[in-house]
Length: 419
Image (tube, rainbow, N blue to C red):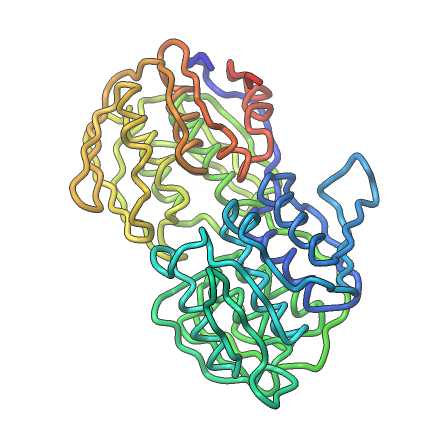
């Protein structure tokens, strides 16, 4: 890409990756078809569909040219297993554990990365399922789970997780829908994507109260039926494009988004100088000056999301002053710092805090994407840099953004994909 061009035009936001992945797994809870709309066409979604098909789930696209609308039929599950080859490429594969165990009475799922429980742990998933009566063993890198002795279903219980965990909440929520009795999930994740999953489960016949709060109460039912559902818009994709126009200037209108899920992000963008007009499902954003520096600390929803940290760091690199960014969710989420510095940024790290001193201009260079959101930050920095920037390993980008370069081209950016 060649930087320096302001963005101007309109774009539409895709469905949320972090909602679509658990929603796809929810099909395992019913023998009836589940029809889904607004499913993003992403590498992670394709990986999850491949995993479900390996288990016996039938995947049908009513329109062969339209991958955002699909029907899942899990009437036959012949292999309740998630092998290492699939899980190592996408940690969200752990989300098949709860629904498989709840409906089939057994599940065999590789530990994420094939390693011992550690960073980004699944111990809270296991703890909760054991409290629901599951018998679980870790053997040769696999979580092997089944109903307890003499049981014909999981048993409801009151579960308090040691930490807020999004995938842990989703796994236990799905498992609880078919458990006997009442399950109470305390310290539950409040992310909109968790709420979207819960909304689908209610459409399927689940009895859930407290959606959107940190206390979910689930009255188990004997079976769930089919349903039709549209995945919510991706708030992180929305935030990423807003950071892009804040970095390079211009005016864009984002359609099919949910501003009400982005309060913390929009507040920081306003602080940076971005002018915004909002409706219920759109944002028009205008930037005509150098961004102001914004400091923040990542935390669980509704606070500032860790998935927007890298994009804001890219914005801060060209801000008119210094800022500090504290990462509290993931210990390894500053890998983009070295690459941003290659573009001329002035960033240093002290523990879990990055100190960013804004510079007037970045300079194009060859950089390497290290993870999904890091790749987005490098694209934003490249759009703002003088000269040409090449971002390698963009397969990370394709995990969470549906053809980002095409949307940016429509907005006037000078960017192309090199095969």
